Length: 199
Image 1 (cartoon, rainbow, N blue to C red):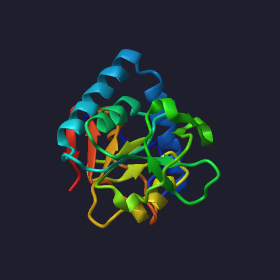
Image 2: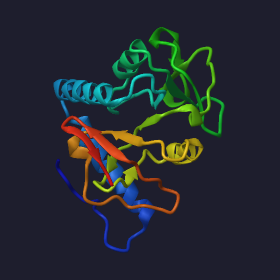
Image 3: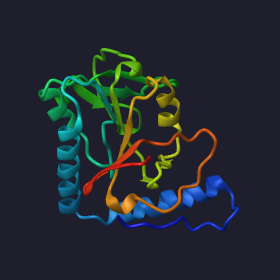
């Protein structure tokens, strides 16, 4: 894994440090080739599929933009008998989830993020594993999200002890992520090189 630290002075403002790190990670992601992205996505999907227990309910984001791609992964999870829960964002302040209905029954939601057309809502507490998004993370599980705080709020509804894995590239694993009290850590990082526990 590659590592790095945000371009911010020690003791500087945490939010500004987050902004700088987000900018750096987004720029690095933007120059990765489609072939590199597709290879990393395929490797991550294989790792997750090999590690998820039979019959587990899995909560997973639906990717957009430069995020690690998840549509193929959730299709394969659903095809192998898993219930997959995906976020509902449009018109909601509090996090909500619904059963993944297949990509033919998705529409663009808030910020263009796909979501079910006719959602069958389920609580996150029914999930046995949560696969979350983010821009960067440290080896001890400190996560940098995109800035809205959605996952930090959502994870409060997960059952105690349910593992939270973050999907990202090896190059997005850094030495330092500036954190605030509300920031939640993740239990493992899933990169193209493996599933890396953070504890």
